[in-house]
Length: 290
Image (cartoon, rainbow, N blue to C red; front, side, top):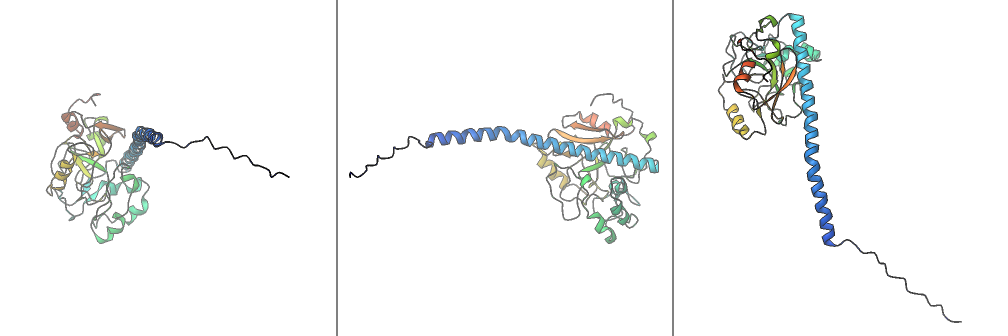
């Protein structure tokens, strides 16, 4: 019997990717990722900006509810005397403390002893609480050693000046502004806006430049080429200097007006117009300019 002969198995005609083909595929994937990533980042920033606008809406509603209950806006800061110095000495109760019951934080409000002052030992536990509605989601900074910060400041004046009882904004030292006193119209007057806290921030409970700002300079943006110099200037300010508004949103910052409307103001806004928006009764006819 003849031994069976087995035919050799045919060689496979399949071949692997060449190095050139592999590099081309990788290059195409890289280009697609490069095109997609900015769109994803833009979508995320749009979501964060929307969430920030929601926070400002809540602060506007809280301020209106406070006004309904007390028949005047909250004091920007409470202290026996002024001007307010940017140091942890004094009562310095910020308007954000007054708004706690109106932003669903009654527990923290009850624990805060206003008469004792912001820096009193009894108030250390409540002022060290992080309040989500007081922070912009786009803010990448961390909390500092003193206390959790806020990105929303009340407008106390239309130019760089000490925080005092004669300011022309809406939230200043021992203020109790009624809507009848907003002679330029609540639609045209800034109530609260975004700002970027410096490293010397005393926290959201402190009624210093840690929660009050002026319209003496147009709103800065963190991506602006001169922002680092601006931030260094902020950190190097004297104890009576305050500073202006700003944000990490591209192109400007968001504000809530005295009527409760939230608006985005560009970094390229006319400086004089922006300054006028910080004054409650300068007699300027604002119209629809912004």
